[in-house]
Length: 269
Image (cartoon, rainbow, N blue to C red; front, side, top):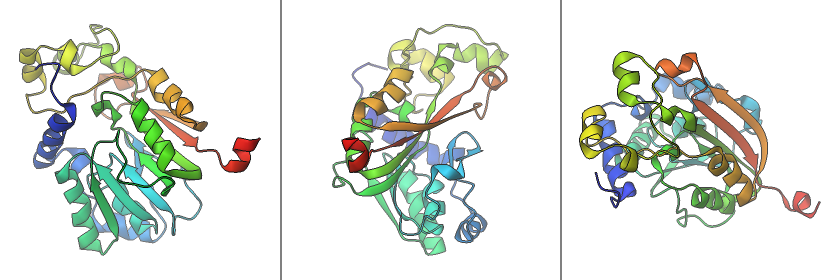
């Protein structure tokens, strides 16, 4: 694996393959979940792990709310929010992930727009196009975050909310082989971590396979500080254990933030 590889192209092909391999984050929700969402229960929408996103992080009524599901393909969050009444656009780097959303939309008669692209570039959308952005754990597949937060700020309307989930960067200090094969937490990597620079080609192919998505740790300064630098105001924070692996016994694996784009009155104040 060479450092000059294009991470967008690599991860696009990698996530297409994840769909073929039935990755759990690529399995579309069933008609029963859509039916419950139409009845007002959309608790299956998650930002981190298996934890339902706090209801008060959303508007009280989703009908007519313009939502961007950012890097959130797979036929899961987007269709549920559409069934709850929102106007949903799903943006993702993987064509196959977007196909999962379109499949659910066709099956359950939902109106969902899907757009292919890199989460750092949302120029497909005009400024102030959305009331809410749902960005579940996915920016670990992106090499830099500042452009993501700037674009989120641009496309949100004043008063709009960004709900973002992300990995605890400390998880990346551990040796993958010791953790997965021997159940041991062995500190190995210096942060910030990136597959391309911390693992040899041979080691990465042995541990995760040559076609696995590339991952990057990001500091809390990049995650939370980056949102603040883009202009957001943080209003809520949550954490959850990782959905798999032994680290869940010792530390949170995921964090989530709710941040608002100030409206004009708040900005003047």
